[in-house]
Image 1 (tube, helix red, strand yellow):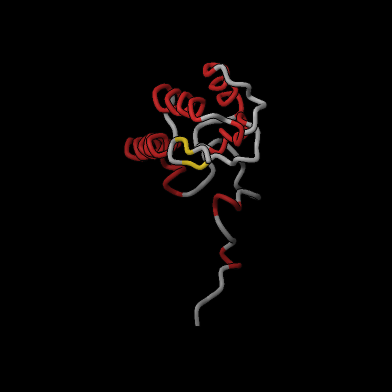
Image 2 (cartoon, rainbow, N blue to C red):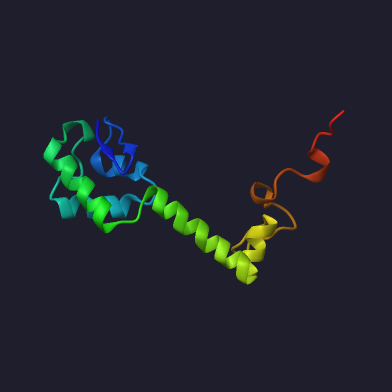
Amino acid sequence: MAHIAGIEIPRNKRLFIGLTSIYGIGVSTAKEICHKANIDEMKKVADLSVEEEKILRDIIQNEYVVEGALRTQVAMNIKRLMEIGSYRGMRHKRGMPVRGQRTHTNARTRKGPRAGAIKKKK
């Protein structure tokens, strides 16, 4: 099984789709990685040789920020926004939509269940 960036890549999928299971790699980045490694992106992950896995692992490790490091970076950016008291930081702190969406109606994903919908403890 291909193990890249601490993630098991699904064996039954095409390479460029399998790479998207790594946090920080989308479809276009996956195709770019396949092109850099000179590996056919339509090849199944199960058909990869050990050398090809090593090439992919090296490219991802050396040229891209993925998984834990990327999650930490995103969390630090949000924390910085909250510390400086920017509008976006305040929205993050209050658990409200950050990018200008309406909140009069909708926004339930971000705000949580309605106040009347929360069950009281007995």
